Length: 521
Image (cartoon, rainbow, N blue to C red; front, top):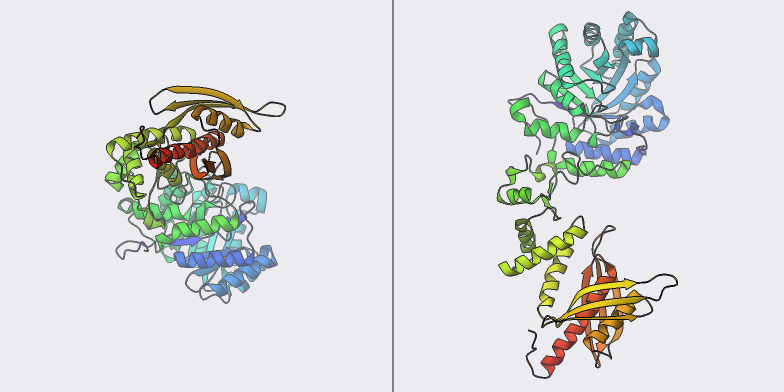
């Protein structure tokens, strides 16, 4: 649900994913993709969609036009420099929008005035005012940005802001264009403007922060604390260079730390995760695993202490509910740092009810596997429990396996088995390959000479290079068919265990068929 509260200021969310976000290297979107993202942003309930920079290309112009036609609730905005042709193009692009806005900008910092525009301060003020007034010929809603505001002299910045508000700008955005600001600098800069611009309450003060020093969200929030009422941001924080303030982080910080910021947004936060995934998919810019709010690890816990705490009380290690951002539930990632409590919880969810003794055995096997694999999946757990059940009726247990194979080498396998009495038996054999050699050695050790392999199948149980392999074999012994299955990250080991499993089944059945209770059970 949206984070609205009539008793606190509402912070407008201005999304520039389709403009500044698309400027990320390699993130170009076609028109259909832009429209799809725009519709997702409308479902997210953003206040403003900056749809593009219409003067840059015919395609960008047409995309802004198409978005203006496609969405009805958000304001649709086009960016323009304080140049007549830019403003005319932006005005034409948004003229059919239900709520249209032209966003004009002009650089104000000394370094930009000197080296880029080569203009004096009074000339910059005039250009800014003229740009706002021209934009008002196309739309009633005009926003102005003094580019590189965070590096502009505060008194001069105040002069520019006062002038553009007097000219009719309804929103004035204070950009940290190159990510130079810090919260201790940027917050006071916003406060300075409120104290030194007489007509500042005639406009909404906005901020647009870049993440070059990793401070975009922190700077945006510092601005909110000092009176800013619009934050410009992008989904997943994409944008020029190191990106922009991440929309999802700004929104959830305001919501989670309402006690500090005492402000709210209209964002439907449960749409954050789906929108993040859509933007990631269409731009090809993947979200890092440890990304706040929407990263794969944001609500994942592997450490045993954390998992135990989460299972007892979610708020011990989570300050937000996963469902609030559109994630179904927290994930207890089972790995080598996980504890017994998390393992039992997951096995119970999978339908297994184990005794304390069985749980101890399962946990030991789990730890052994976790040392081999970075992450344990449900299929891995099922294999562990299934293997325990089978082992209860095993005559023979694989202790060690060693194989040699390669070009110009005779494949050889050395097998060490333990019988149900605890005696250890060792033998070696050659074959057409390491698996065939292992099977020959097993047959000799167990005394089954007429075993014939009828079928052999292998598949990856889970994904990744460290995936467990599942081997399923069908073996015919004394005219009867027996299936065996085993799992391991080592496929030769899984093959040997599956074959031995089928032989154990045959020996168990042989005793039963003879009317005897198997001695090993």
